[in-house]
Every structure is written in structure tokens, then in C-alpha cells.
Image (cartoon, rainbow, N blue to C red):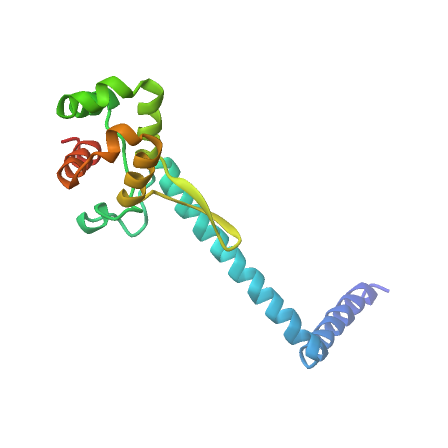
Length: 168
């Protein structure tokens, strides 16, 4: 009587092993395996996207590190300066006629949001965050604020980017 529990347990384990061997030889095993591999790949991609989004949202350092070559990349982290008022003042002083008359505080907040905050876009099954490129921001600023930005020439944009991205 004392060994019956152990015998039942060993029989159960043997049944599981033989069942697994038989299952592996069936065609449904390959369907199950393909679904499991797809699920694992989906989970890996999900974690990768979440990590990327967290790095952009919370300004976390990436595992690979950020070198000088990456700082010019549109997807690298854009940190707003400590004082956006200083940036605004520099731009207003350089472009006094354009900026002072037309843009109010809400407009400035929208401009700085376009520059410094990442946007989400759908890529496959995931929402991936990225920063707008300089060309995209220029086009959006021209569309939203036609008067000051439509008259900008290349040297104006160069100064604008120097001030807002490098605290010129």
C-alpha cells in the first residue's frame, strides 16, 4: 500500500512522456510549433517596441549607447532646453517682425511640442513612437503658421534649427 502512490506517479509520468512522443510524430505538432514560434516572435517584437517607446518617452539611455553620430539622427532623443523662454527670445530677436506680431503662447507651445515630443504611428500591429524629422516639422510649421514660416529661406531654417536643437 505504501508504494502505490509512487507507482501511480511514475505511471503518470511515463504516460506523459509516451504521449509527448506520439504527439511529436503527428502533423498537429508542427501546426502547434509554428503557432508557438509566431507567438514568441510577436512577444519579442512587443518588448522591443515597448523598450523603444520608453526610451523616447522617458529619456532613458539605450543599451547600445548614444554616440555623436546618433545625435544627428531624427530618432535620437530631443531634449528641450531648461528654458524654452530663452529659445523663444532668441528666435524673436532674430526674426522680430515675423514672430512678435503673430505667435501667442499657445502657438509657441504647439511649435515646441512638434519639435521636442515624439509622435506615435502605427507600424504593423504596434504603435511606435518617433520624432518628426526636420523636413516634416518644417512642412507642418509652414502648414499651421503660414505667415512667419512660409517666407523662411534655407539660412533662416538653419538658424532656427541651430537655436531650437542646440540652444544656439
